[in-house]
Image: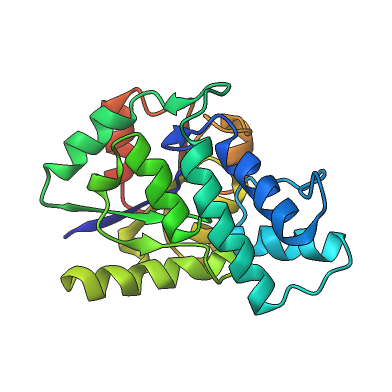
Length: 231
């Protein structure tokens, strides 16, 4: 049996040092003329489509398709610039490279993404850290405001990419926020939380994670958790 492993990006695989937020603010300013468009809005665990819609509504603007596309296009342009800049905690998170190398060499695991990032944004971030090569496909935040629905999108994308058909019980979602865990809970998948973002291990477990770790730098325990069947 092959297990489908769906990884979040920000706070799970990498920290971009604020590149995404800076690029989003710059793009929104260019399109709408408002500075500090994010305000107090938290991006953690949210899809980019949802974030942009909330930014428009917070400033009394209709999130039309034309405006959303304009922000998307300028955002990915700015992200390509901002990802090159230094920032706090920027880098690949502990244990990630070793874990991905191990999993990529095994026939009983398939690696894909489940992320709120725009697809092009995900590619820019992971290419910068040389991690994009591990992931053939996945589900992204280009259109969906409901992250929970991305589980089914990811499963369909994987089936189309390689013919692998799995049940939700054969899927593990790896993420750093309660919203990542909620996708698994809603869809009947398993989940592993990693406290390298804004939430601690206890919070992730309380959200319903089947296991949670301070980081991914304990390969034996992490691999055991990824392979552990649902109780």
